[in-house]
Length: 221
Figure 1 (cartoon, one colour):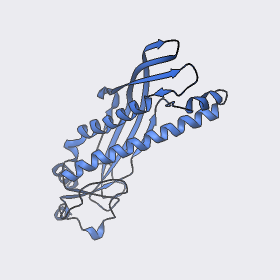
Figure 2 (tube, helix red, strand yellow; figure 1 turned 180 degrees about the vertical axis):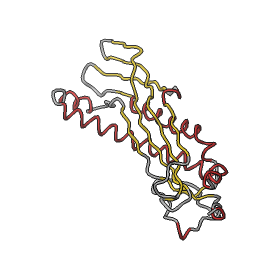
Figure 3 (cartoon, one colour; figure 1 turned 60 degrees about the vertical axis):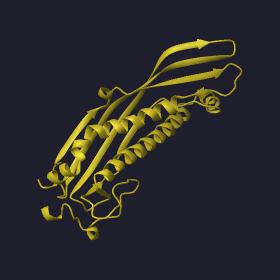
Figure 4 (spheres, one colour; figure 1 turned 30 degrees about the vertical axis):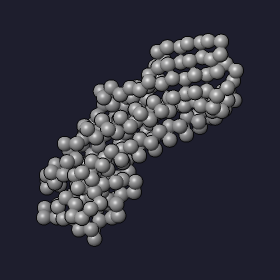
């Protein structure tokens, strides 16, 4: 197996992992299997335009509000997944690591459990509109595991990151006209900035672990 670490046979590998990018040139330095990320995001539900009217209409229905929150959180989870795939994919491309679905010396598993909390810093009211300003802060846990090719064996390496330690914040602003007009709410953009920064910071935490030399050394164990 040691002699195959830098020349993993394409005939034994799956197609490039769905959604993930990585090195696509000839003669990769390493083949890495990447499992789909397990991602959960809980964040404030953005309210824009008619969305506010829907919320008011559903104010007496917990099921309706729950469905709206679930859709928003699912969309944020998809967005974080896209950011992780892009950030890690670019890194793997630089390292000449070919990303596949299976049949590789190592398999990377990643889990995100993210909570975004909203804090109001200022409220302003005029005769025409109400304005709320505040911050969005990310909390939760990131966990990773690197498994070898032997089924059922314990992880060769694993670890966690406390997302609160990353101190990720973004500012938001909500402006609601008192005449019932369109609400301007930047909580979605603020949350997406947080998730993008989270993907970058997690990669920074893992760069030394995912460098091609480190992967080759780990696969030899």
